[in-house]
Image 1 (cartoon, rainbow, N blue to C red):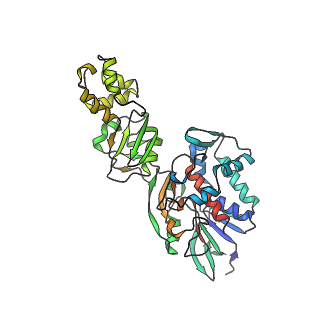
Image 2 (cartoon, rainbow, N blue to C red):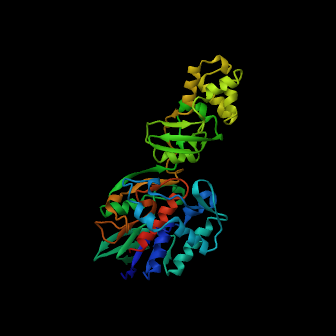
Image 3 (cartoon, rainbow, N blue to C red):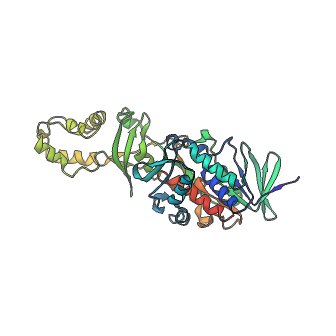
Amino acid sequence: MNAESFDAIVLGAGAAGMMCAATAGGRGKRVLLVDHADEPGKKILISGGGRCNFTNIHIAADRYISGNPHFAKSALGRYTPQDFLGLVERYGIAWHEKTLGQLFCDGSARQIVEMMVQECVKAGVTAMLARTVSAISHRDGRFVVMIGGREYTAPALVLATGGPSIPKLGATGFAYDVARQFGLSIVHPRPALVPLTLGPDEALFRSLSGVSADVEVRWEKARFREAALFTHRGLSGPAMLQISSYWQHRTPIYVNFLPGSETGWTIQEKQAQPRATLKRILAGRLPARLADTLTERLGLEGDLGNLPDKVLRAAEAQLTGWAFTPTGTEGFAKAEVTAGGISTNGLSSRTMMAARVPGLYAIGEAVDVTGWLGGYNFQWAWASGRAAGEAV
């Protein structure tokens, strides 16, 4: 059987894989880019509501979760949001900044996909889409990848197929299977940036489906102030997606429904409006349906003037630290990313190559590096892809 030879084979034509292939091809390497999907960048296309939140100007390693909190520093430091923004602007793609440093396309996410495809074309990358890898082996210092009954070989193999989040796009744990085959360790993968579910004890809150409010949510030391959305299954919205990446089963999260309120505000309201009810006061600060539900749960009826200060202080404490114990998450089907993955312990933070398997690389979501919501995971994809592309 005649095998076709390349300098590098990149498995996965997503953000990380295309960046890696284009970078390596730009260095004169002969690169094969393979994906089982019929078009590249499917996850890019649906991101940011179809406008692709392609990076964040506030990138820092402490905004990533990993078994090694320092691992992401090298790649992120060498390929920055400004570097990727420069590429976006060279292609004339209009963009804008939204809240918290998030950068989006003015138009369509397809512009980012087309940009990366063009980068690969300019770099002479050979792309094979809608093709399934049936076997991978290693012999004589080269990786042998079987596709459609034919062998393709290269001294470098890059795993860029992501994790199992959003399986409807074809996502699988393929990268983990290959990593295990070559002796790499896997940090247990779990859904991240995912809605949380509530049990029957919290049915009153599930009845608020569609109500959104600005809150501060915390779990241990992690703390986020963004919008929370009540759903028919539980809690969603940016604040809840953020905390879900940190949350551990059978533990509570704490929600401050009145972030920014001064301590003692209930007593001040009592003095200023003794005939007002707590429900009315809350309705001035929160959506009416949420105010009703919180007041009902607190069980506080009557005018503020008739409620003891001690009772009001207790209500204030609960409103600023309301405990919810989620029953779980909505799983990989609704998770924006996967936490866990190929352990960083066996990878070089500079090149993304496996220490014990020369020539084997892992990048992007396949690796145990998970960013915050808001462009952080795309920047990790660009940066880790760039790092491997410069090394293969």
